[in-house]
Image 1 (spheres, one colour):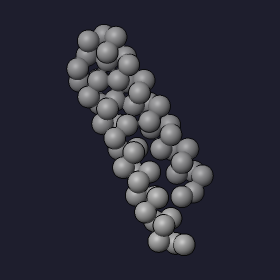
Image 2 (cartoon, rainbow, N blue to C red):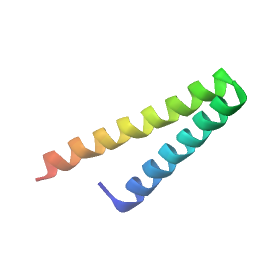
Image 3 (cartoon, rainbow, N blue to C red):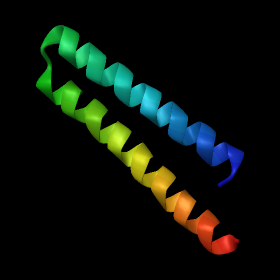
Image 4 (tube, rainbow, N blue to C red):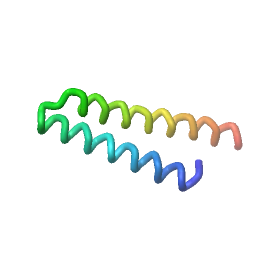
Length: 57
């Protein structure tokens, strides 16, 4: 997994956490769900990159 991918995925997780926290604070369920979805997307991307790395070895 390239460093660029790691940074992008980490940034997406942080953005998702921020959206979720803001949604919690403002009782905005749509924003909460959007934040959770962003975090899940980043986790899936990380898992996909880890699988690619495993097959490269």
